[in-house]
Amino acid sequence: MKQKHHQRPAPPSAVSSTVLSGFLVFGLSVMIALLLPKYTALTPLSGWLATINAMGLLVCGFDKRQAVNKRFRVPGKVIVAVALTGGALGVLLGLLAFRHKIKTGHFFIQIAAILLVQALAVYFAIYFKVVSMTQVVEWLMRR
Image (cartoon, rainbow, N blue to C red; front, side, top):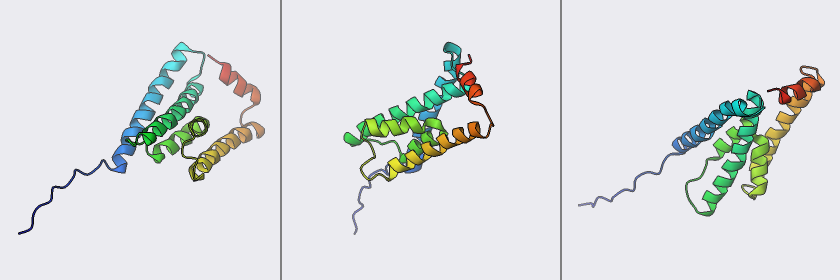
């Protein structure tokens, strides 16, 4: 007669941890970005960019601490999603400040490429007069 082995409960799947982390990061970012224009001189878009970049920096710091303590990690997909939604500069600064995910370089290069594409998009929008530099400065200073 075979003995039944007690099976360990399955760890949370990558999808569920990605969804949970994503909802937490983006939920907090949206709430803060909606409140910033009420209490500061930021426009909604500049409030979003400030919030998502700060969140990118914080997520990298949190993930580094979790990695050192060998605990639940923020999936790389969530960090890339933060970068893609405007937080590439914050994520890149977080990777450098916390010396996180830079050992192999591929993750760092991926985030740097996202930042480069975003910077080029802004540059070409100004260069091809989709928007003028004056409009950008006015937009940033507008209440």
